[in-house]
Length: 437
Ligand SMILES: NC(=O)C1=CN([C@@H]2O[C@H](COP(=O)(O)OP(=O)(O)OC[C@H]3O[C@@H](n4cnc5c(N)ncnc54)[C@H](O)[C@@H]3O)[C@@H](O)[C@H]2O)C=CC1
Ligand SMILES: O=C(O)[C@H]1O[C@H](OP(=O)(O)OP(=O)(O)OC[C@H]2O[C@@H](n3ccc(=O)[nH]c3=O)[C@H](O)[C@@H]2O)[C@H](O)[C@@H](O)[C@@H]1O
Figure 1 (cartoon, rainbow, N blue to C red):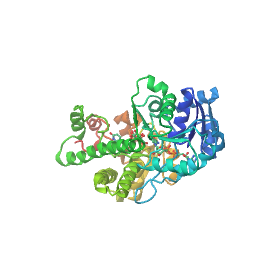
Figure 2: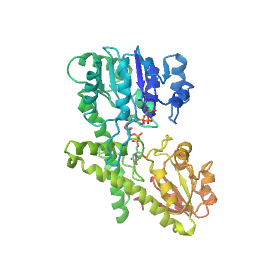
Figure 3: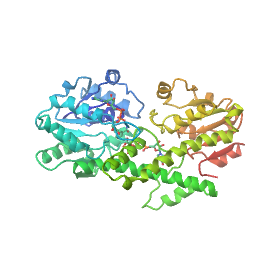
Figure 4: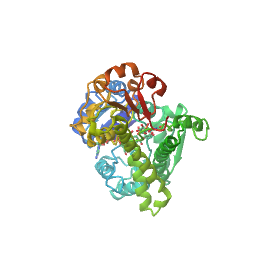
């Protein structure tokens, strides 16, 4: 099939390359000329394992092309909208300007039987509004919603072999043809046994925001438990293991620590709350405000812990901050807890030297004043305390003896609860974590 992908960020670039990898002819569009030039050269504009490989094979096959000209989508019959939906203001509502602009730019190039597939994460009700926008503009193309559930760091795998596919299609003219087109696009995954949920537009939009809200709630739940565990001498990791054995609960997303960040979970729960307020249903999801508050409190908890354990910023404290990305296997620093901790420590008067295997460029682009090291050893050299805020394997596997030789004082705050306390204490470290004695 010939498909277009509009928006070449973390979602769109991976989606475009994956669609081409599956054998489709893909034209991918972005308004950012620099990003398009980079992608055309076969270089992903961000770190994503597996993306360089499928990008280069798809470009070489001729099935993947990048452009800044929307007119180039002519000839494609399925068009994926994958532009950003960032947080707009203090209300937390999603900013839908990019989605509206992408659709408006696309409309003049649509064929009468084309399918427009929304992939961006949007507040429930958006798809219906966009479908009306299409109609008002005189287009007979069909708008459907097919939310995306990929995780950064596993984006290629999640796109090629997702846990499920959700097809939101309105009843009426175009319903059956749209479903057929979606089944054709995803034929390989479906043949591989991926479950498909066929539903209406509103449910499809809501599945996405509900999934992210649930994941965020799970993390904040265990972080709330970590506060209680800490006050009572209990161990939050053992608690998570024990409740996680209950298959109704499950162990995944129960890792307590500095909390969730990134370009999605934080903004998505706020957008969900804002949309519920608009619907007069703020009380129904009021708990998401608490999920957000618990999550942000974790960042403050880590900053305070480092200052306390390090003896206070007024002592001329030097802190090695291990990690800047919002999670390992990504260079994304959007709403990164790690970056917030680094900046919070600087604001408190500490001298911070940070290191991340992939996210240093992105962090420095945003905060050029942040002092970064060339490697983990340089960050640790002469530090009074280290704080592990992103659980890259390189940090999890650190040898405490070697670390101790580099640092001025043997103190470590494990803000992801990933190190072995006994091993670090055996090397003379003062080890501290969130909710583990
Ligand atoms: N990053 C992720 O892991 C996932 C993101 N999502 C959702 O996907 C959407 C996109 O997210 P990201 O890719 O992370 O954002 P991003 O900010 O990395 O990428 C958005 C891209 O859209 C481009 N764009 C903006 N307006 C445009 C227009 N009118 N025409 C063409 N291109 C345009 C921007 O230049 C940018 O390259 C969001 O709604 C997000 O919530 C959903 C699942 C996973
Ligand atoms: O809508 C999106 O964009 C995506 O958001 C998340 O994916 P992602 O943000 O890439 O990363 P996650 O693996 O979900 O991690 C999010 C944050 O939660 C934190 N986390 C995760 C798990 C855990 O147990 N504890 C915890 O603090 C991570 O460190 C990270 O900061 C969802 O997992 C994806 O399904 C979804 O498609």
